[in-house]
Length: 404
Image 1 (cartoon, rainbow, N blue to C red):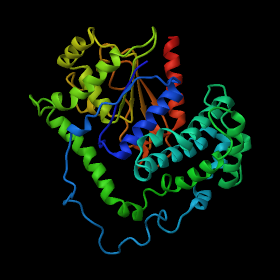
Image 2 (cartoon, helix red, strand yellow):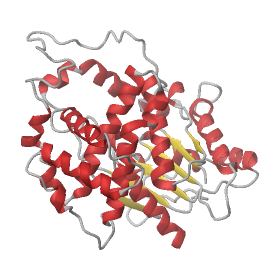
Image 3 (spheres, rainbow, N blue to C red):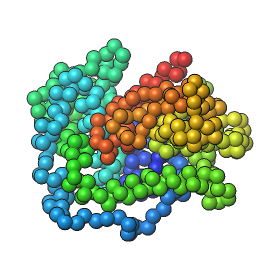
Image 4 (tube, rainbow, N blue to C red):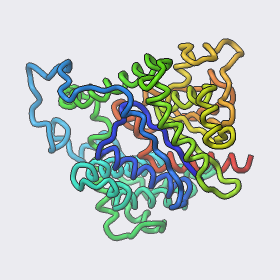
């Protein structure tokens, strides 16, 4: 059962990216497909997109009233874990929407694990193992055991409706141990409490003026890569030769699709492709390009067939409305076709993620799904893959397709 994941903009090889990929692969294997031997191919096209020097001389630096006491101690103003009680009462949320509350804790733990694996341990594999992964898997087991997420199931867990986040952490510790699954009772409570503390930097405080100034350089570099990748892709889309999009960006993705399509799998097992951000845009472009399709068919030995295409936090609908695809701009009653050979296309967007858009109005056969990552504007674009419920819902959608 192969999976190809096509990354989005502003993605480059690094220790942190390697840790994120290891963790994401482990979550796909354990929460979606529940198979350790799942073949996952992660093509790198970002290395062939926009390039900047390390010095970025065109970036402004803070002037005037400089930042005071913003560093390892956390967000400005001395905010600590206790501040979350006034900003994000997890126990209150859990009483009516346990999936959101538990997901937020798991998301924070997974995010911290990526940073630690890259910066502290210098070991990308550490992000795919250890306490954060155990917490994510245990959280999924708890939600499944309670029937939360099912159409007719409950939404809240009464025992988690605690008065403050400390009491919520204690209650969640107990519930995780009761639910069983891949978790040892001892020590998981410390992971929960640490994750709640890490939430301070992930939810509610990321758009303040002080935080923006303190992180301006890293943020501007990310935004520059975001815009730069799109501009390079569009400008060189039809450039022939080694410097064109086809040779530099299509090629690694085509190789990954061939590897996924030809990977061993049992009869009836699906071939799944995920495109995040611009990865979804590129996939539609590639899969509707006659020359690229011919090259894929030659390498595979048959026309490519994708059982499930997921575009996540992506912009194909936006690009279609600009008329940037060969089929032109969709008009009233006339939509662009689904790529030939794609059996099902599901598009996931988040209202908080300003770079995610619907596709159903522009393309035939697409199913749009809203998903709330419950994080701030700066992090929503990548938060999908830090939420256990995202993987649970993906598994449920694939199960529906199996029954169709």
